[in-house]
Image (cartoon, rainbow, N blue to C red; front, side, top):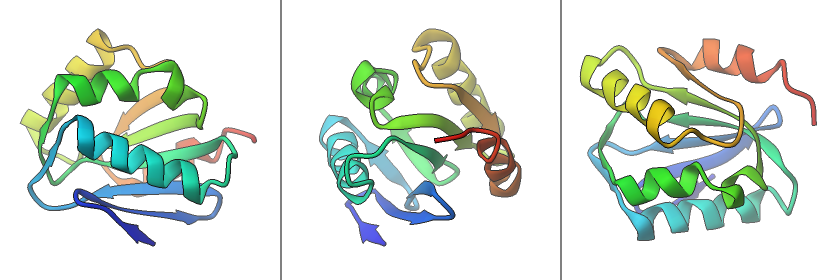
Length: 124
């Protein structure tokens, strides 16, 4: 596991887990750090990714654009985003999906197990 300022990032069962920390404030420098770590632990391979944003306090517009970019697509097969059961987080995540339109297959989930099951449908 690699710890960044805002997240813990690790690989388990061929899925990259990016688990945001309590009250994470994600801006450009934080998302750049997380993508750099993700790229390094994947050793240049494109991988499925589970992102848990249930504890995020703020995720900037710029950070959301980066996650929706061609650069992120080049290292990600599919992205499952765990938003939990918080209505405000679900609303922001749905807004992200409609406005930023990620280039990789992306779906929102309330829990990690369902997110993992969805990711298991994707091949390398």
